Length: 248
Image 1: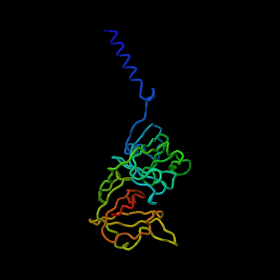
Image 2: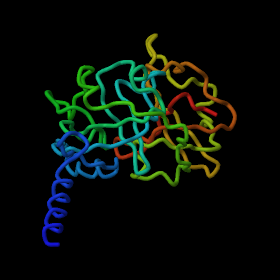
Image 3: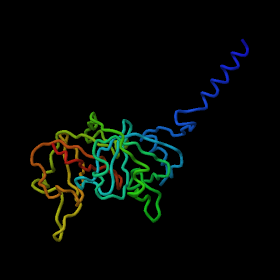
Image 4: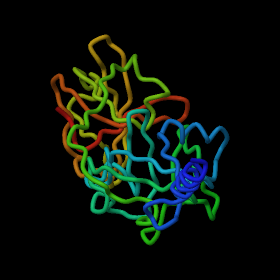
């Protein structure tokens, strides 16, 4: 009887020390975006732990709305990732589910928000993840067919919504800007421009459109509409960046 118990104990011990990967025991930890962003309590934070997060790509540069970056989101938060590729939509399409290996990357505060990228080699807070290293850190694992942005009013937007996609219903362009395009033209060049949206309660919110946006010269709606955009933060204020031309 004692011999049987001893053999059983040894078997259980050996079983606990093996894995399906031929003896390799993974040390990776699945984390949320909210947890990852919480690590950056100062100006920057270099990730040295084997953290992995799974998220959905909600915005990229396919329409020029973002420049060399994508925004990913999980149920807890969103974060912008700096990537050294102009056409980020060609490698990380919207609504792709991605797995992000964070070890070796850098978190940094850029314009009042936390972004993810490569460790800086210059004066910038972070560098873009190079095209050569992108596959090491980010891989597509599926599609998120059920993704929907959270619905917010201007009044409800808070710190927790920074870098998250939000759905804003029933807004109009301010009276002063009626009939204008999303971007101005200065000296024959399109320039990044801010406009003002007004909701039914009379609250206002800035919306910023990059000069690279493909619909930069499209006239803004003259009637009530809804919009989906990423909440951004800089100079102690929130503003919106429309994504995927979702002007409804």
